[in-house]
Image (cartoon, rainbow, N blue to C red):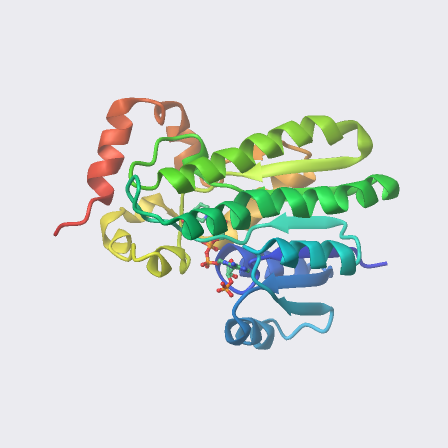
Length: 251
Ligand SMILES: NC(=O)c1ccc[n+]([C@@H]2O[C@H](COP(=O)([O-])OP(=O)(O)OC[C@H]3O[C@@H](n4cnc5c(N)ncnc54)[C@H](OP(=O)(O)O)[C@@H]3O)[C@@H](O)[C@H]2O)c1
């Protein structure tokens, strides 16, 4: 029988590429995103009868509660939905911070904790969390984003160890710059020209390498060879300075 995957943030970028990949592998899909028009466009492109499309705001606690209560238990969870956040210290208001925290950290935890007991009963399952390389490096002017992604990274690593002997694998993916709509949506479209071509990874590469790591039972993966090579240097102040000058706006 075909296995069932739940993908959040399925309508574009990494989530869409993941949905397409799983479709080609014959999975049944529960695809969740917020904007109805965008979701319908993705539905037209995928044109897949084994996919159900759901439109909810995942920054709200009740949306996650509804999914946990009403969706069939997935064999694979791809916790991917998210946004890029641009803002120096103190620039984000309370609501922006709380919504972002729930969307990319608290809600991911509630979603996973809602389904894990049922996955344990089944004795199998895979969980993939899309974090960011920002979880392990300083991100000046994106400190909230970085702290959210660190939180979910720490959570993923811990439950990976906890669930290891229960037939469930947990893999946290830490992508660098990925060519998606995320930066434009956050008003960071200048990055398109400022970040050198070799630093961009495609959503398809993220999916391919993350899936390989997940199937191999790995706890974490940094997609893209460039980021794997540079990882040891990310902790140095000089690397942070270079990154800061590369991503600075001209005006
Ligand atoms: N792009 C990068 O460079 C990069 C690097 C590292 C990590 N990441 C992470 O990768 C994940 C996917 O991002 P992406 O780059 O693929 O961005 P994207 O193309 O903008 O896709 C984001 C997806 O998340 C959904 N989403 C956003 N807010 C939502 C909400 N409140 N409720 C429900 N769905 C919501 C979007 O649906 P709607 O359009 O309907 O809102 C969309 O399907 C994020 O967690 C991001 O932090 C991205």
